[in-house]
Length: 453
Image 1: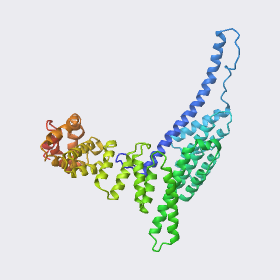
Image 2: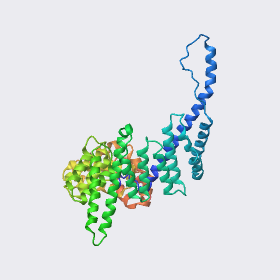
Image 3: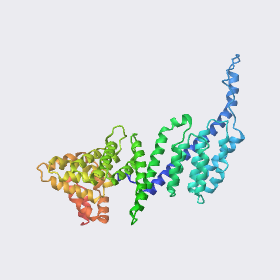
Image 4: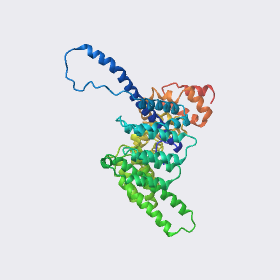
């Protein structure tokens, strides 16, 4: 399931690596905070004696003692040893010495037994996240090790119970244990613990959403298996239908909550399309794109457009969606299709709009070497030249670009690169330079003339 932007589309492997990198950064931040808290404790102890001695010389008047000058707690041997242990863990993590980090980590969880400090929850989260990070990178880690850590941390405190369950299910899912991942989410979905239950309502909804997503994954798997069976059994079809019902009911409920639900939307729409419930699919996508209670999300318009295109709806309806997408993401790859629709029109205003759309695409460096975009610009100008005022239209649109477009597109470097890597692109761009920047002497065309290209 991919997003709709060229600039944000990331492969699954890269997504996972990005998430791991961010997790590592967060862990390092948590380590810094914990170590700083230990350091502050030492500083308080060192400065207390100096401050108290100074205070004793300031005034000899008898003052009532309200307990305001109580001696702060000194760092005990226990706290000192755990601090040193945490420093060694941090050093091992930074240098990717996973075995060493694991050995130190075996000693660190004793901090969870500390009752003298009010930071028990932060210690629990730190232990959970560092343990998971070490196991992920350790060459000899096994699934049983993950399960042991997650189960232990689930029962160390209720504050992080739901998020640990969710992370546990992710790990099971990545290792192909879909049914077990679903069981973990089902158990956590029914979790209740006094006031904590109400405080974690949003997390509970997230758990429900992912459990429904797992129902969808199982539905896809069974549907694929059933389609490759020569004589599918009726009870198999019923089983597939049951997974659809379970997933669709929960997803429909979850999607009532404003948020960015891209993978859940795509899953729900795919199931609805499979059972030919096009009316409901269109309603879901329209609500996701146009409901003002949801945060702005360009992908919502991408999904709606792609659905309309699959259903062969009138181009007018498709253009309406792309028009809104153009406002939010003028560099989107679908702007090529939007300009294509506009180019088909016989209205001069639509041709001029197509020119603006493509020029705005070329304002972004990611399209600088795209032959398709430059060819589209060439086609638009050719059609625009059928109008009497075409020079004025081009000059007006290029007025604000004269100062920086030559540096972005028409330098000697661009000419040399285009001639070597994409000669066809150079053949398209070179004539356009005289139309787009008629008053400028450009190095792009000078280089072409000098080198006989």
